[in-house]
Image (cartoon, rainbow, N blue to C red; front, side, top):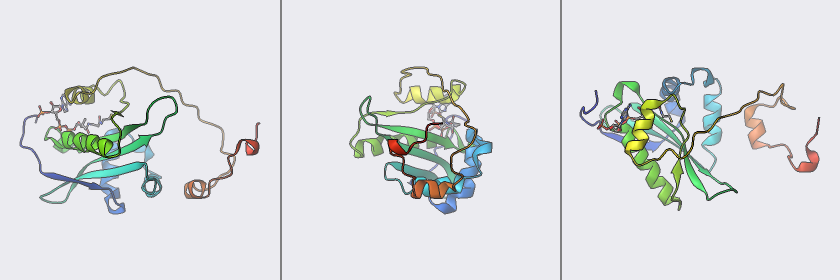
Length: 178
Ligand SMILES: CC(C)(COP(=O)(O)OP(=O)(O)OC[C@H]1O[C@@H](n2cnc3c(N)ncnc32)[C@H](O)[C@@H]1OP(=O)(O)O)[C@@H](O)C(=O)NCCC(=O)NCCS
């Protein structure tokens, strides 16, 4: 597969009509059980100015063959950076230069936003993608562990949209300590 002809693509903003194909690619990325609220998450994230969702689309038949999520990370502990939160290319078209174009796009977006650092976290088991990032000058700066805790239940059962758009008053005096 590797070394095959390059596929002509354009990179454009993701829109709601890309949903089906983006979900398919999300399964390939390894998140088959995270599709339920995909469309809701898309429409919310898409409104946030520090997030950028794009797709790679073939010029020949306008087929979505990759997607990427970029986010400006406003950190107190270090300089602001851009994170590639997700990047995936259709498994049928890997090794055709599409990932490289997405990465170039991400780097240009970072520079256009005024930042010089771009980073990503990748699972230790994704060895294939490690070679990809190393090839393009990314260095493995640290290996970390992720800790997650599933809480019993949220204090309110609001719909995702309501939670984000009408954020409850989260000032410190209003947080109930249980
Ligand atoms: C990682 C990924 C985005 C790369 O996309 P891609 O379109 O296949 O990459 P490209 O064709 O642009 O590759 C560019 C160069 O990177 C290197 N590269 C890409 N994938 C590689 C792999 N699996 N192993 C070794 N080198 C690789 C190659 O040198 C390639 O150039 P060449 O084939 O012309 O020699 C894609 O493989 C993918 O979607 N993987 C599954 C999802 C994933 O792991 N995402 C990252 C999560 S952090």
